[in-house]
Image 1 (cartoon, helix red, strand yellow):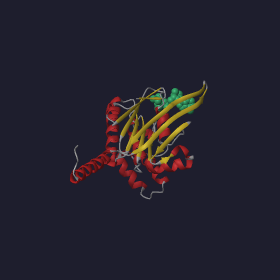
Image 2 (cartoon, rainbow, N blue to C red):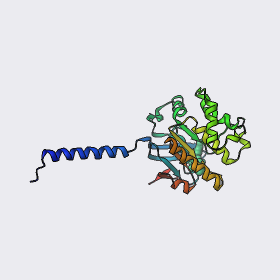
Image 3 (cartoon, helix red, strand yellow):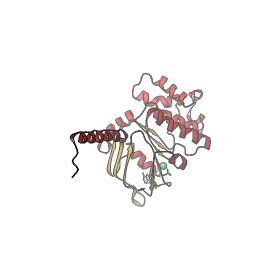
Length: 249
Ligand SMILES: Nc1ncnc2c1ncn2[C@@H]1O[C@H](COP(=O)(O)OP(=O)(O)OP(=O)(O)O)[C@@H](O)[C@H]1O
Ligand SMILES: [Mg+2]
């Protein structure tokens, strides 16, 4: 029988502790946990199930894409994950908060502090300049440096010469960049972007994609992107595919 000496046992324990520590260093923490999410709505045809028992986990610092055909439930899922909408059943844990059991005020507080959202159709306020649109979330938080921070955010994305333009005086790509600056100006922990390159030409698509990856790199912001752009989707660490409300493995 092989009997290990005390010294051998001590070495084995030390090696296994180092291995565990190294593993821990590479095991990422989850920032978003989606468990058994189902969304049903009333429609003219009766109850419609838009999302069916969705389960997924998103790790801190990752860029994740969600793809799928039009109508498969991508926007609905993104809105539920960001706490903008509630599921019919299931649970969402976002940045340590059980947002599915919170009321709208509490969810708004989590969103306001830690979540950025870029909407499919920009949602810029039409009567506000690019600068005022970007300043808005900071002003809501009472940030006295709102103007300087917003000017800096706009110049970082190359729009320093467009700060006074109203949304209808900006190109589609510029509007999208303003929407990203507005979502990023308070440096959220997680950014959700719904088709950020939809309806843009190839050059603008590349600018927006590069911008999102550079934000992730510079601030370690976790990013979840809904996209039809397969190149953008494949460049993400993880890709999830929705089909008729179900997640494909
Ligand atoms: N409030 C609602 N009432 C009824 N049906 C809805 C409602 N919201 C969404 N739907 C339906 O749910 C399905 C999923 O919508 P959703 O907007 O999530 O799709 P999507 O994958 O984002 O599509 P697209 O790529 O076109 O943006 C669609 O068939 C839509 O018609
Ligand atoms: Mg959509």
